[in-house]
Length: 420
Image 1: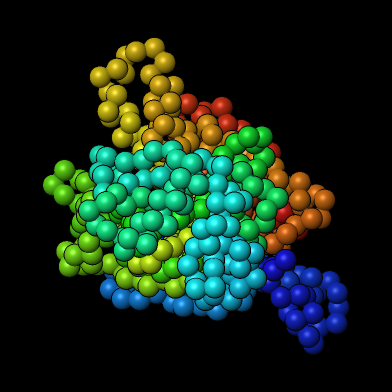
Image 2 (image 1 turned 180 degrees about the horizontal axis):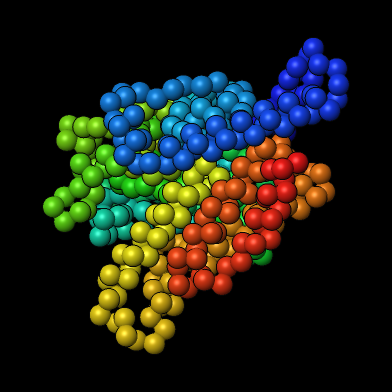
């Protein structure tokens, strides 16, 4: 596994032979490094600064699929910056050979034969439901039959344009191993926590859609990071740095719901063409809209880690405040706070207690890994994770429904680690 920790103590001062001196220098460098990382991270969490730094850029970086974890952490996750990753990241994936035929198109027969009995959510891109697309559950075999005929007919605009989305494929077919989870995305608290809950959902999805299918303007669930790899086909993305989406909203505060890429929509956005095999990294809080310009299959993950967790918590609190405002007339009702949490979970996918449970699980896992000397991404990365968890958990004291959260043990352990 790649390691974010600083260079070994032999490289700190090659002229120093005393082991005590080398250890002291290494510790000092570790402290300076983590201090620098935490200060940069604190700075880049500011939406106003991100808007200032990103609003005038017209393209995103394209990086090699063999980029190291450390480089990806520092250059993209930590500063909340998008990138397009070349196809060598996905070149050995099983689904690239089995889900795609010799022409580069979806292998409908294979998909029907192996996965056709599943049921997945399917959106009609031509039917608006509030500010989203109308959805229904559909057998995968029926969707594939529709898709093949729709493609053979030339993707007619006067017929329904269906888009299979948010299919929990890995959960349903855990032994199939359609792809390798890239190392640069491995610091994934959200799916790590979901895997600990028997029967719980994950945030690993398969998308399948014909040419012309699209996803309306949105920011990802929980202000999470996301990555999306094209198995076949081509997508066009438009990304908006955090804060710039405000320029797109109507007088009522609604984001645009429109199929076409109009000049009004492109103002302030970054347009990206994603080819088969390529992977896009979408940072936390970046609004985006996506079009399939060919028949396309993609694999998508949403995830959280220490680089975006504080922003995710702030966004959840913002959602809670919106719920409380909507239910203000019922504030005198018994159990009003708990009811607000119920509504928050329905809207955001998690309530404050669920969010706290995830953080406590991650903290306990990292502490257990250090005690067992099974740290996967380096000790300094583990300290970074624990510090981020503690920052959010300590803020729970300001939330009435979570005033029983105890961070004492985490804080003591983290203080001991940082002093070693």
